[in-house]
Length: 268
Ligand SMILES: [Mg+2]
Image (cartoon, rainbow, N blue to C red; front, side):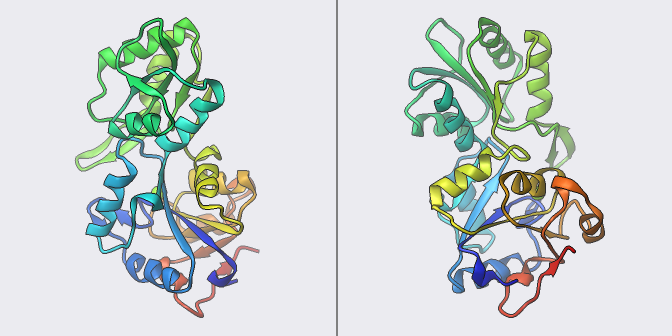
């Protein structure tokens, strides 16, 4: 197996391209080589708070070539899910700027308060989300409008330690409203990767990630090959012994596996 067989590479970010403020060793060389071999490199993230443009700027600061159209977030996939329930109108936007921007891109009008004109709720991570935002979301959900969560990650890796992720705040609304979201965009659900494939027209994509329960599972659910790199959460041994949808197709120590003539270990 080599990169030449793949037209689009889908990269998870945290643990694959960067860890906190630092670029992962081998990521720059691997991604540069993938570009030189003609593969499209797309960066996919469950983090809904930042816009694609903001993430592309961050990647370029780390020395990785990326434009706005090379980034797909769970907000963008979430807005597509919203459009499968309602075609237009006011959508209660809970989360950071990425949530509102993705809704605008799909033609919706993001609002911060619930009223009768609200046709759906989209809830994603944002560091400024507070009680009043969760209360507005609860009013809307109890009124029966479709509720889309960008992702259900229960934790968020902050500079000062593990902090509540979007899933924890979704749980608050679910507990208060008496039901869960109608749909979820982020990994391990397939919508985020489907969004990236739809936007690029990928025919032979490969999902590259560091977590078995999100990155690898999402690729498996879509039926596309997956590559586990050992620079983040899961070890290569954990990848080799995983079963079911968490079993990767390939494992490699780091992204230098994308350099020409490097072999990827197929998980037998
Ligand atoms: Mg990751």
